[in-house]
Picture (cartoon, rainbow, N blue to C red):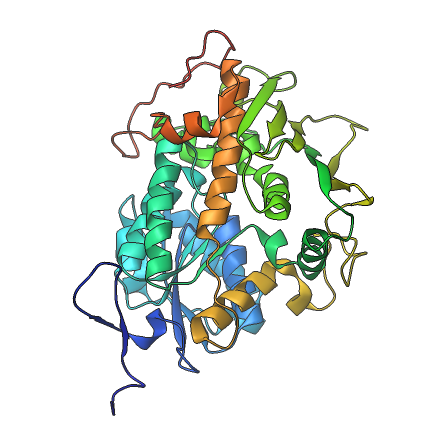
Length: 428
């Protein structure tokens, strides 16, 4: 017992023996310095490091990995130049800068306690599974996959993370925005009466990562990673990659997922050239929950002068309505607003909550399964729009659709599937 501050014991579900792990890997780590590793060093990963270190003390980032060296080195330069207030706690030496498709294994195998997953979402199930199998806490950017096979893989690892009492924090930052948290709690406790309908919108502009097109020497797989938002296998389409935020709020309010959906969509604005890949630029969905309540969902990415935009949620009740954040303190703050106090920024608050969960001085947090269900909800809508079918939860949970390549390499050739046509596209 003299070594209790240096060791902790956890029992895996169904196991007959104890696993001895470092105290940082279980709740109650106390004030010891936590060590984090980042997988995926683009803009999201870089900002996640800044947000983590802004909101927490006794945390260091000591390992980083990416398939592109310029991403990794650029991330380190950006943090040093733009965020000197946290740069001293980024201690990634040359031996812990990993490049390649196997970089995630090397980051996870480093002497770290927290794995930060910020690659394009096609990789999320594989990387999350590896992190949980290594008994690491995880910050996991949304969405949690791009196809049903991958999300079910993620869900299996999510169950294991709960059994091990590992902390899993999602990048669905509205779940840590004070005004959203307070409003959703009040709605669930009857503030607007019985919920009778929900509306979710992400109506904005396109995400074009390589407007200048493919550079000389970029083979297909390199190109699709450099321009990942345009390809279904790695981004999931807008409804999965971006609109998930709004869908997740509605599922959060309902404390469940829909049981079926009918959706429609297409590509009205996106030109049919290589840059724009094979995703839709608009999808409209009619979801139904088990109790008969419907969620109307619409996402769209058009570009042009004066084009309307709207990123919001609307919850309609028998006694009133709410935009999902108007009943809480700070209700005048939009989730995208620059907060004067960085500790009130939900992008920072999610990391504060994660570290408090790990240390044991805050509520235990594991958002893995809930956000995985929201990811599958969004995939269900995409598959309905692509196929023209009504898709049920049972259908999507039994779907054999697996979009992931069977081999990886910078010079691999890849065939881009055509833009889905309802009635021609086959739901698997």
